[in-house]
Length: 220
Image (tube, rainbow, N blue to C red; front, side, top):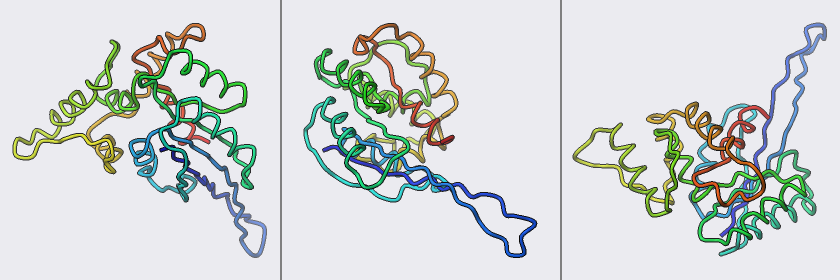
C-alpha cells in the first residue's frame, strides 16, 4: 500500500533587535513523500528526529499493490491536485521484481514531472546495510534480512536476545543512528550512484538514491 508522508519544515528566523517588540519570522518548506512500501519506508521516515524545521506532521494512506510507475503517478496527482502546494515532492520505491522497462520508465516519468526519486535496487534495505558495510556487489531481496541482522548483532554482541529484522519495525532509524554510520552510508551510496551512465537504471544493482532524500531533509 502506498504511503504519503507530508513533512512541514519550519525554520525559525532571528528576532529584530531594533523593534520594541521582538517579532518572529517563520519560513515553511513542505515536503511530500509517496512511498511504495506499506510500513518499511514510512516507519523509517516517521522516526526522523522532530527538530525545529524537521517535523513530520501527517500521514495519508492510499493505493495498494501498485507498481513503481503508479507510485510516481500518485506523486504527480497529489502534487498537481492538492490544496497544499509542496516545495519538495519525492517518490520512494524499489526495483523488486518489476520489469526493467517499468522501473526505468517510472524514473524517467518522475524526472519529466519534476518529481525526485529515492529509488533502490533491489530493496530499500540496502540503505540500512550501507550504514555498516560498503556493499558493491549485487544482492537479492532475500539476502538483506540476514545481512542486516549480522551487522547489527555484531554491534550489539548480545547472545541472549539477538536482533531479528522485521520489515514493519518502528525502531530502525534509532538502531541505525546508534550503531551505524549515516555519513558513511551517504558516502558509499554516492559512490554507487556515480557509476550510473545512461537510462538503464534497473541494471545497477546494488544502488540506492535514498541518500539524496536524507540530505535534502537535513538541508532543505
